[in-house]
Length: 343
Ligand SMILES: C[S@@+](CC[C@H](N)C(=O)[O-])C[C@H]1O[C@@H](n2cnc3c(N)ncnc32)[C@H](O)[C@@H]1O
Image (tube, rainbow, N blue to C red; front, top):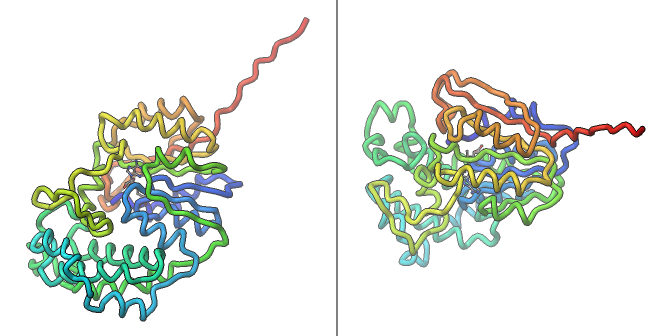
């Protein structure tokens, strides 16, 4: 939801020259980080949700490690420690999956730990998480209709994945992920932090891309994607609440609730003072509104506001027809010199 892959060509037009290092600070699906990597930049990428970080490790940090057929045998074999891996079966059977699929996921999760390096594990997480998303109508886990939709012939006609085993979907998409792994001859890094904690530890960045949750308009990533985070973290100590069994307590974002968001943006911009160029994605249905947000940014940077209108509702995250995708293109403030004439 909110992935920027359909806007990459447009965003690319506003990337300044002379960039060596770029950060995708709220990376989500990693689509903009992937663009940075393709452009040859040293790419730093970050998301406070670990399932997104696993995509970053697999596709951005990773230079040349792939999942092989031998790895697949390990992943699909019956797990030896089944008893320690029953979370998905116990929590999500008949919520998103039938019993056998939930058990397959637990078994696979146990075996991920048999892969002998963290990058291989990250590819396994990225692909299995994507496979789960493909199998659920609407591609998110914020509703309880998954199994009802999966028995509706009309919906199945439109999306065969609803009735396909997750294992098949995994085997279909793994080659595409393996194929997307490349070395851009830079040391790229993926982080799993709150951006406000990460920024003080970084230096020498030329460009920051900020695509924060659009507050007041589909900002609850932990509500929509809770299952992927639960699967990746394999939470043992959380509660699973509501019909959708989302985990509680949630991580603190700072950017998804009206009461925090202005203070968080002020902090974000202060901490980014040393990064000369910023690109900020936004939407005209978010809080604060465009004018107010522009005023906040202009305390720190000179900026222009670029807009692209959606003609259909396919972009996610509030991108209903008629809403606008906004890009704030921010540059260091021009210094104004006042000349004094000496008599
Ligand atoms: C609009 S989405 C980014 C979409 C992304 N550009 C893409 O193309 O997929 C916002 C992301 O910010 C992350 N996020 C929210 N609060 C954060 C925080 N305080 N620090 C880092 N990431 C955060 C969410 O997990 C979510 O993935």
